[in-house]
Length: 292
Image (cartoon, rainbow, N blue to C red):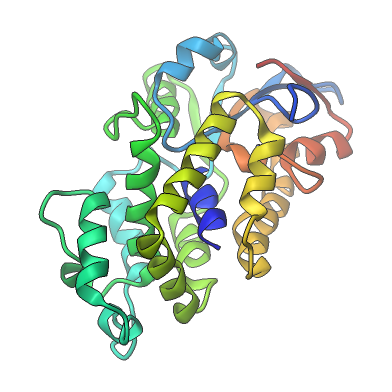
């Protein structure tokens, strides 16, 4: 479960260079006025990939930026929208869910990956375990992703560039919906198991994050999707966070790109596989060509 969690959150959240082994696609045909583009992001990727991929050449051709949620929102407003979904019920706080575990040992390991120096598990008592695991996963992924700067997040970069260049901005879902999927899909007891597993076996979790980062660097979506399935005990999590969202987006994307030439940026895992949006666009009659 921890490997799946890391992959889905790090990418929310992948063989050979063929098929779905690219991260940038051109979408045309079916009477589109102009091509649109789909870019699969790694939410913890360094901004240097923008220059390496030459993606801005295609970004500049679009009139609209489309993403998972509207990242032009004020950070405080976004945080407030997500906060209710991250809060644990009063009878299921962190200490209750982790009762029977060596809390001090878990806390020591958490501090190695905490987003701020001096942060301890006790300070996060009222958060759901998934919210804490998100922090740990980000810390682990950042550790194995050279050049990543949390102040220059890749998806946000495209949204800000869109605003600066006068492009329209569109979100595929609301922060509230994303919060529901991330924090309310999996039972709290299972969330606690994930957190404990990550903190008790950090070397395994870090290695999983490293493999996923390498797969993204190599544009190997097929490997990413296979890695995300390892140790998966709760397929409903994959169903909700990945496949169901893909299906929801596919109800909107054809109309969006028919109306306005768009640059679509979503987590790379959403592109891959039979239920991914690349196959979804092809099934709608569009011609989809890998670029990078």
